[in-house]
Amino acid sequence: MAPMLINYEVEGETKEEINSISNSERDEEDGIVNANKSEEIVVTKVKNAVNNNSASEKVGIVSSSDLSPSEIAVLENNVHVPKWLRFIEYPFKIRSDKGDFLPEATGWSMDATARGPVNQAGTYFGACLLTLASAQAGCNGMVCGEDNRIYGMKPSSLLTTVTAVVSVVAALVIPLVGAVVDHSSHRKTIGVATAIAVLIATGAQIGISESNWFVILCLEAVGGFSLIVHTTSVFSYMPDLSLVESQIVKYSTGFHIRRYAVSGIFTAACTLYSFLSKVDGDMIGNQIRLCRFAASFSFSIAVVLFGYAWIFCFRKRPPSRKKPAEKSLMAIGFSSVSKTFCRIFSCVSKYRALKWLMISMLFSPESGAGTVLSIATTFLTVYLRMKALQLSITVFVMFVAQIPGSIIGKLLCNRFNPFVSYRASLAAFAVSAAITVVVLSPERIWLVYVLSGIWGCAFGCFYSTQRVLFCKLIPSGKQFEFMGFFAFSGNLLSWLPPILFTVLNEQGVS
Image (tube, rainbow, N blue to C red):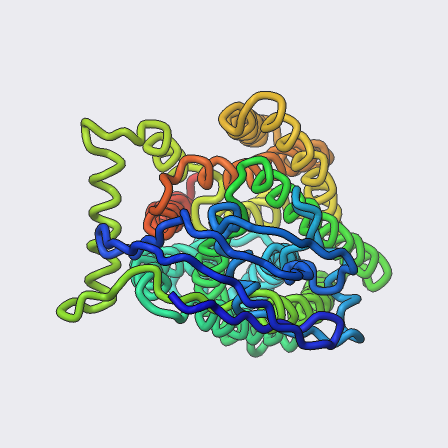
């Protein structure tokens, strides 16, 4: 094989590194092209391209088996970042065990951080939506009778119904998204397109009013679906970041700490704004003003972080599998899900731990984007009748608590293993959820602030550990196949909780 020429720019100066690559044997298994990892890349004077603005140089011989797919992608497709823009990425950089900063890890951190405020803006939008729907249905505040209906249902059922519809559509489309990611070079294209759709839906919330709230709800449904697809495309990059489990743990914890820190700042700002803009007796106006502020703030954060991450950090990827000419991408997607399901859940499966992780995914608090959020928002707003300021305080406490939760997850992973951390987080969430159902009432609303701290700590530990655990259990060479099934499992039954809530609510069950 001829020497491979790699061009990249460092500090505004173009350099060429000639990497001599020995001949590699390539074979196909299940349509996956696997390169023999025995070749060596000879680097004559390599200024580490994954650390685009570091002054350190590395000289020597680097075996390709020591490089993750993300590191290889950066070497092959380096993107020059203008000096005057680099300050944006500094808070989101996480140093690897090799001492450098990987652009795709920085992009993952920025993308995860952007999704935090966007999700939280959805909480304020949901509360505002329920208030406006109740007013249009003729309810007395948030107290509605059987005759107070909007579009044929109780106002309190509106948010969960839309969430259920989005979840069903997402569960059907996720296999197609996985097939596109695996069998085409459009992984980054999907990430960019869905990020734009999320930004449009979030930006539309800035103009919410008593006359257009249903139109904004429809746009938010599209945005919620886009966010699920976007998260799937982002997750396909995670197994590429490192070949070392401890590094994945470090990255995952760093991602979530930054996300929770920015989300905490966001919710603190919303809480302060809610307090300063509060007008006694104007419940609808208070909700609208808070929703508009949250949407404006989250949109500003997301447009900067999404834009930087997908323009400068994430790299394009070639297809990881060859597409059979006789099959459509939809057929390939469902066929891949079916084969992976049989491989994991067969009686003689060697993926026992992965099987139980997939089962837990069906009922985990992350099952579907926004499922738990929509039910919790409805519960807090309608049943507990929380005001805008009270809801802001609850969200703030929960997000602040997620930071120590992530740190606890990292400590448990390093001290024991990801299984212990994952089980502990699920147990904490289950216990706190049970306590919530038993003890919370409008008369004991102060308990929400205590329980929200437990919810946040459990979520912080859960989210950071789950990613690490799945990356650890994926067999080598099957990252994309299993990551697609991971996304599918997370959305397969996500429609069930909101549907169940809606049915019980429509039947008058308190």
